[in-house]
Length: 192
Length: 187
Image (cartoon, rainbow over all chains, first blue to last red; front, side, top):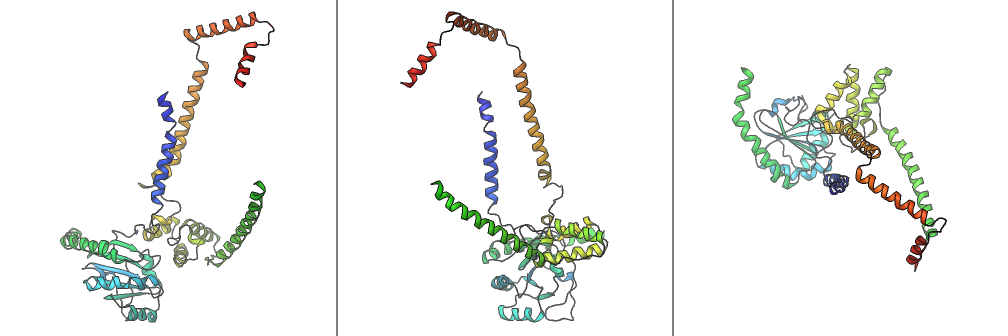
């Protein structure tokens, strides 16, 4: 009899459990999802730099050192707000690569003059082809790429100063260390 | 009280109907603004329409790329059209999008380690429900047809015996016992 009564509470327990689970997920940021490119090589590209239309750069640009790739555009207000954080990262010696996404050269250059240029090189991607291959659906988006040219971290949207301190700098440190140690092993495997 | 409620409720319902009508009108306008690729080949057109309806826009919360005017949805539609003209299969095109934007873009997620519960859950729930119903029906049926055991048989005989006795003792009487009982309760 008692057991039978207890069985009647099973639906209640299920509903409360489900409610708690769903309630807890209610605060999740719907844009916070892992990039499909994590642990994948940075996509191939062939683009000119923002400063020189005659130049041609490809994905080998990202080999040999850890890089931060930031996708930005003059039309993107959040990109202006995160410039101080990017300048801070540049002043710490991080190799910064910009992707000027769906922009015009004139506006892109003007943006850098006005808000500062933390990037050692800016790729000019007017049609958003590299952005598309990166799975970028807005700006700003930021990728950390290890010395092998593999994407190790992805950040969507605004980078807050605390994101630099708590996430980006530690991640840069983490991917810099194994990369220097393991740099020789994959090459040896590939050649054998 | 009721009339107050009514005087509020009727204008509220009217306002809602008007709002829904306006929303329907503006939805029609928004759809008209989306640029869809037009194919000469009706088969390609059909595949394009179904692909753009089944791929989810990564920027928008819950819109297919064929239903969204965000720039990335436009880029994705363009890529779908180009790949179709290239002769790629539907699953090639889905793989192409998933490789860039993740499983998120598939409105019909694939069956894998993370989604087996999603696909299998309903079937498991139906089986579980059938099992419970079967158990309940069986238990009831067994309870219904089970013969009385000796104790129950004895109790039944005793009850029937006292019942017959009471009928025999007061033939045609208007059950004074029962009448007294209700009268007491009322007082």
